[in-house]
Length: 318
Image (cartoon, rainbow, N blue to C red):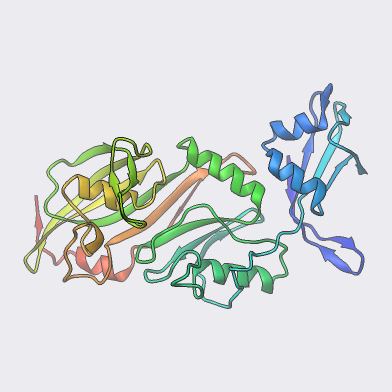
């Protein structure tokens, strides 16, 4: 498979629509079936056909019922995408860890929302990414693959088109998308390593809070203790957490269920005093790249407000 964003002439403008090129190894298959086998969803294929995309075989436009032969070259040009009315492009600071034609990995600071909401319509990570795309005249909108709470810092994965978003979402549903977090939790966690496999659902009567409940969605969090400390009367444990699912507030809910809520997380029982937010940071994202199928990992540094609570001058307890 060949993938490219190489500009092509389109009237007086440059065509920067996302495109993929495939080589057909074996004939005897319809174009529709071939594209489905390559991960192109029915919804994406419909949008490509009717919303300004293009499908070509050996340089000629073909419909999805076209029979393919061995050696054919299939080009699919995805339609341009426009940001939704609720996502206004803005010029903002972005800490970009990685970027290619398919996706972008951004290190989000604590205090910034991932996407706009009624309470935070502007200044979000998505607004800034949309502004970047607009400045570069990239015909793409922002597809957030992984979200972080406003007060959680760290890595966010954003797809540049609906097809890449679909492929990454499929990985996440099948536990092929791993994220590692660093956190400070209340108390001294006894076990050095363990897994929390508890279903998570919405708390009755709340639109925000989640709880462990039998009828919730499957969720798994692996926990590893990195150190235990006593700081200004607070017993804390520094832990690394690996997520295999992406439920809302998963780490916060699981650690409260385990009896060790995040320090600073007043929604789920954490105390304040040492940090002005929940002490949680997404330090690593790993997955199979949707275009190459190669395993990729991206990392970022722990922010200063968490790092200063884990300095070597803090008394460590075993």
